[in-house]
Length: 343
Image 1: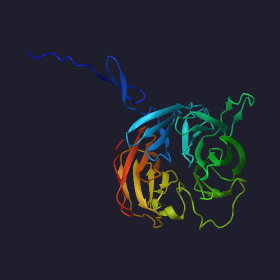
Image 2: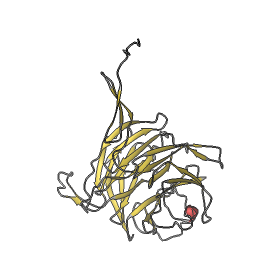
Image 3: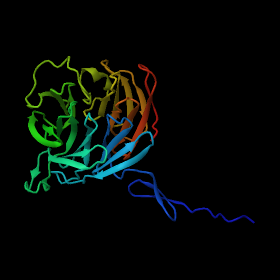
Image 4: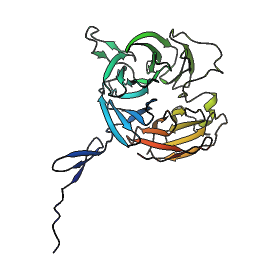
């Protein structure tokens, strides 16, 4: 007859947080770390190019190693409750250019600054309206509007936050303590994207109605001069002359393209849309309906797309399929392609 199998018994468990566990008599190992809620943003560490962070509607921030395809650190910032009594959740992320800090914008108006490696909380502020019920305690917040965008200045000395209160808030980073320096008001609806110039002197904000405004920093005063020749550190704005071509004919609804990001080498731009498609285009792309390479992986609604600092990876998040996809960028300059997803 057949011999009975005497090796260690393993079985596999799927959790309500979309994790897959391998369980034996003596150990439990997470094979796949999933997300139990919509993922709203992703950011790459500029000094450790294979490490990225995600933030979800449940308020969890997670660090991922793209090379190992593994999660290695998590922090629960709390889902919170927004001013409209809906779930607050995590909305936006950005690493400081020196790679030391990670800022998160939340749905209840909070901005939390963490250590980029350990995710330990270092500072917290109320940027999206609301306020503190007990300023002495400094922890009990009145719900505010969601913080849809956060962005450190290139010199890491300023942090800009913006969102549903239609304002841009600028904080000064003084030895890891963040003090408000200016509030910039002028948009008609939720601010969805922020970009700094390379010299950290001018800030650009774009709202859901595609209004683009410019501000002097750190004063926060409106800048009304010519910005055509400015050198922008990033291009997250979904509008502007260099990215006109990302808009396809018949698909120019204000919410169709959810995220845009320019490569560090400034030769390409990636865009994510409501149809679940990640598109790669040349930068600048100034012709309407410019040609693009199209990549499918998400079931729908790509909430964010980002190049890594070395342009070796692209990360995309889905707010319906709750997934992080990491794509490997391949090819020489001028012929780049996206291969994947790999995770």
